[in-house]
Length: 320
Image 1 (cartoon, rainbow, N blue to C red):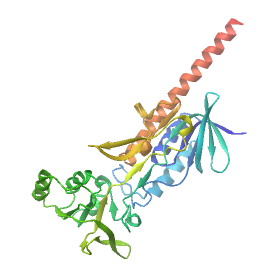
Image 2: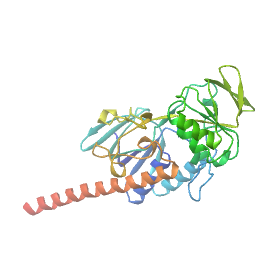
Image 3: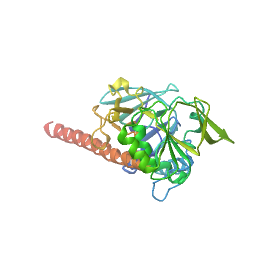
Image 4: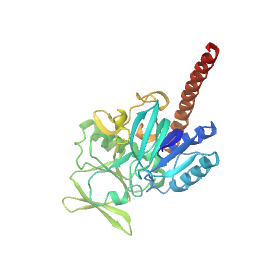
């Protein structure tokens, strides 16, 4: 027999747990299934989250899990492998062989980073190899920072990161050569341009010390900015017809998302999305807000369904 809950939340990060908290407080039965693979796991702390700035990601999740459990929701370690529609709701298969019946689904996990293929880069991701200045810029302010260009967006990133440090180097790498206008902007802002492919990173004691070029030269750097491609979790909900779509800016693709509308609603009735699965730019506090917004819509959707059923039952009794 399958377990039965009002709402199954896939993913136990800020988005999923925020949604679970609101739903549990709305007296809904909630199960959160979490694979334990948060995108921000390598980071030392969460930032721009009022009252929680600098909190290690794992600590924030532990606090959130305790709050959610206090209202009766269950958080379980596991992985969702497939979902199908049954009896007006959903049947979800878990990796351990179990199944769960849920009236509604909230997808709030599974997004993953695809990194540039530079030797040593993945090992420093989230520590000395960074991507978001609002997440990590303060921690490397006034340090020697490099920007690794892998697309035309590299210029945008360099100009943005210049806000946090005057010691900035633009590594053209595999990105296009800056235009004359962009080169003038770099010169005006004191951003050094280094041509040639980056072939590796130099480290000492597990920390970045320099960026190595194909010609053998090493440019000393304390941090390196690299743009990942954030991929949406497409496998678990593919059976419902929910497929990832690519997103980008200025003709450059920087990831994929599960398409959502207002408050995370998808084109599949009964399925909502929150966090990076539907918004690659959502920081932790934004993901949490999206989980809350989706939870409100999910609860109202259930209220309306229950009200329709109650009216139908009352009408049937009156007609008998």
